[in-house]
Image (cartoon, rainbow, N blue to C red; front, side, top):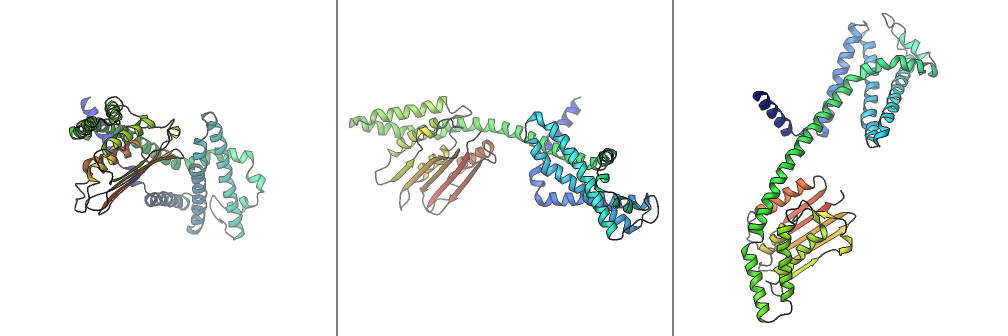
Length: 389
């Protein structure tokens, strides 16, 4: 029993590790389909030659006809009809499948009949064997006779038996792909949970580190000595930041308004450390456009923290520009800052940028675009996230 569980676990891990999407590229799909139809044609050709004793030429034209008809029905069903059927409501799927099945049988017989007419017009005919005169007999039928209800019923089982191997292979492959994707999603969820825990720990122990708090308290002390009216606002900002990191950052998602308010507070506190000649600009969307949107906490914080950590220190122009906006249910995040020329790429951002990129990939697969540009004297981050559920 234990050996069976070990084997099952090993097999599942191998299936999950296999990258279907990387393997099943457009080029590979075309190649596999060509192999499938070529194999079918070879078997069909041998069947006509050996079982029906047709000449090579007659076997070839019959093979061409049968392969063409089957391929047409196969691709119409799986790539035209089925996607539309699946996208419909559940109660109508069975009815649509039945109608599609009848249409496929109709097309199969109709195209076969058209081939017979063309072959007869070209003078092709079978002169010996079990199929003697088959082309002429088929071509001399009227359209109504060839596609009568009785004939469709009689041909139904033949069509099913011919097409069933292709349908079986396609369905089996799609089930395997779906199972592989399910295993990967489960694995990614587990990785994401672990990573979220690590991110929370990293944030509490490193991001809002004692150095940040020390600078903030120093600034607050200076404001208190000068009896500056902004001191209460600084205290409130710091309180909001600590509250957010302690009580909100462990949630799966938070209101987008809360996340942006946290970023505003952080930027305001960081900006106190710099003189007025530093070009620090930031723009946030109005609160009214944020209603109803949710986002994982601290998703973009690493980029902003990174900009303050490494930016505004170069010998040239000092600037930090942040622009966040909402358009068509999408979040646009743009950040640009200066950096020192001699700062090594591996020193800039480090593991924080890598983790932020991985987190986006796990949380928003195929629903985000992240572009990071590291120039000689500046650093840019452009991020777009689809916020639709």
